[in-house]
Amino acid sequence: MSEALDPVPTATAGRLALGLREVDTLVVTAMLAVGVYLALSALGVQIDPHTTSRKAAEFLGVTGPVFLIAGAFLAWVAGALVVEMFSLTSAPRNWAPLAAALFYVENAAPFVGLLECFISIVSALLAYSAAAAGPQAQSAMIANIAVALGASAAGCFIALCAHSLKTVVMYRDGGA
Image (cartoon, rainbow, N blue to C red; front, side):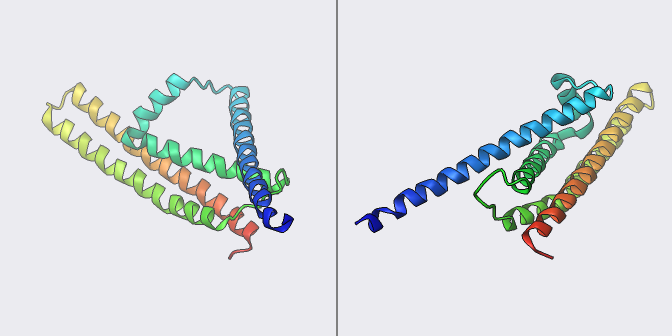
């Protein structure tokens, strides 16, 4: 009779271990984020959430939320790697789906940046052609070109981070 009841506690313990692994991952990710914040603050970079979100909207255009989500995912993967590398959990992680997601982010991020680049350049040209060649038209054109360059750079940065994490994840998983 105890054999029939044994799978239930084992399954519950397994779910509990997975839940604790994810809590550990979130805590480590938060610790990494605080560490980056403190390092940037020590270097003299002032990070204010309101200013940062305004600058992101200014220089990333409509792709800002996409890059924010991708960056949060990459930070979570880094936290998951730290948890596993330092054996902070007893529940092993299946890295294959994460490697696939990192591959997708690695390949999609530059295209998202490129799409915003095209949209911003078209907007710049339309703004320039709609107005006389005065200072307002030039200002609008330069602002849109700044968004184009910012989104392209963000896409490349996210892709490089995703590629690096994917390489580490595949190495841990024993993949090629």
